[in-house]
Length: 127
Image (cartoon, rainbow, N blue to C red; front, side, top):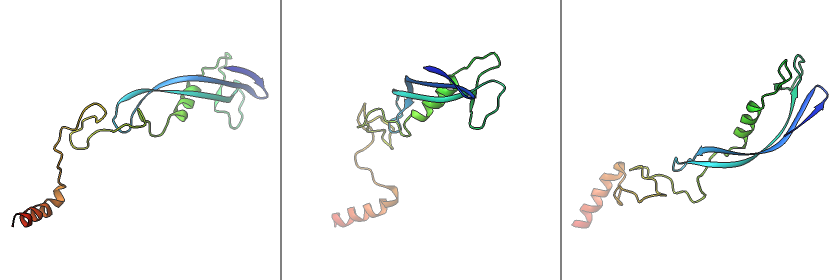
């Protein structure tokens, strides 16, 4: 990171490689997500108010970049993270992770709302 004195504050610039643990939206597995954070923010001087300045130096002249980096990491995260592009997710019936195992529930599932129609078709085929 580079710090440059500018009018009314200090310009913080830099690129930081980060790795964040996220959860896949399909299979709920946790996986590391690598990203590059590009930071460019003006940090205000202590005791001076200026519109549009979110971060400030302390009275002693220190700046803790953790909140700035946390904000940049949240912005860089995907809205719908996937552990891999072909993630199959979990079975809505039995909850099996389809990336790791086969579905444990029966192959033929009949929607309970349509069970009456299924019985009618069976009766008609039997007669």
